[in-house]
Image 1 (cartoon, helix red, strand yellow):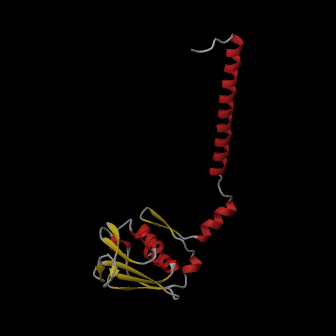
Image 2 (cartoon, rainbow, N blue to C red):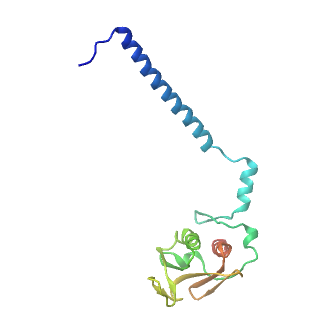
Image 3 (cartoon, one colour):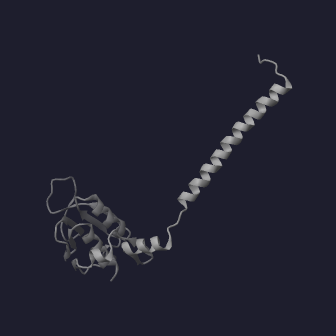
Length: 175
């Protein structure tokens, strides 16, 4: 059984509950306003132009590609390929790379055209991956101090670092 309370005690309890609820709602409103102001903060004109000049942005058949490298970083990389994006259209793209960042950079761009992207080995390998040769669409990446990109049949060999990968993608989509 509940204890009988006077009208004054009930009003006092009701005011206390309303004060607590008001404080909580005010706190939520304040936090959400601050969160909105931080999340919707747009960069200034200077910041936007610096970001735009640092990374390469390409557009090809309505698809946007943002590469990690700048034009200055890739301009001197030797590229000798005749591939075009349509050569990957509807076909499986195989990638032989030990670097997941490189694989993701290639897959995020060429994967939009190929039927699927799959890891593979160029020739024989000890991993549980399919062994492929240059009759398949195969991109082989190897880390190297010298950056270059070249092609043999359907194989594209990328030697270097991420800049070499971006140089290949840039050349492929800017023809």
